[in-house]
Length: 201
Length: 258
Image (cartoon, rainbow over all chains, first blue to last red; front, side, top):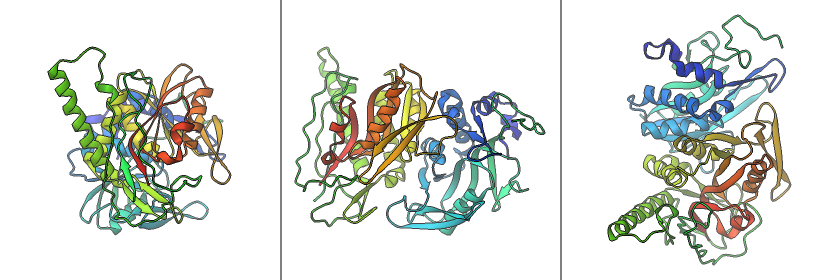
């Protein structure tokens, strides 16, 4: 669901500022891709703080004890949310980064597969968890994150992203879990493009 | 036997009142030129309890004028409170032997992140030090610097700038190469993220040889930024990162030596 669709946040000027603070870099990492660069959001202290605050306001009273952040940009948002809602932060990492015992979940890329890992013992059965990443595209990474948490008996309450499309592969849910997204991807910087406008680059 | 010592402060330009802490006693063999120390003999539980610590007067509490008794008592209480927080933080950092390769004792901060109070205290200790010091940039080194940096940046009103491995940042970047034990690596920062004259902090979870931090310092200084201090949760003092940082001060919460 989109933050702006909810009664409380409809027309919230914070969402507009957050959207405009995100830079679009064309043809990265390869031609045809309009990369949604959240690093410019991190340079805007107010917009960054508002981003965290919107998530915190939503999750503070949901009895969430785990915020799982996907490497690496999920690390930039997750810990601040975790600290504010009194949850632990659990990094979900690329292979061989976490020391000690881990569990792994493979997921499909456009070409080939990749793997996401989580520490054994980081999360207990029955814990309520949030998954955080900067952006959801195909949902492959988030799906792997959900599976990792469910394998250890945690309940994934929601997946939260700063940027994402309204539908991921035609669905509003991912593995049956709700998605909460602040803003849609834009086609080009300095232009809040309504749907239907394609960049002429 | 591994010792942990707690260093709360270091000589730094933020406050002139500090004395330099003396380094903890070194009983170890000369360390290898890599990130972590190889112990000569080892057996340990997963969680290291801190054994002894040393403290210096924290810069925040020093005042130039002579203090009233009440003020001094307040300082003493605050000192104890800080020591308690640091002791807890030290006790929840997990040490994993033989990672990423045999002989290396890896300092794992992920267990710190699982302890809500200790993680919060970690951030608070940095925020207390850097708030109100006109720092407009917190630069965090990929990837564990991304965990500590943003909460600090948000609390002190600074922007957060990620310093990344090659080819991760989109758009125009500047690069700085640095040495590894075998070969080199590169660190990148976005062009335009920081302006000349800004005051910056660099954050990472741990400092060993100081190679990564030095690359980060060079990147920022190349664009005219003043690096006020480097801040880490953990220091491995025998790898002499502090010296390698040269004129740039280093602040750590926990010092870990063998």
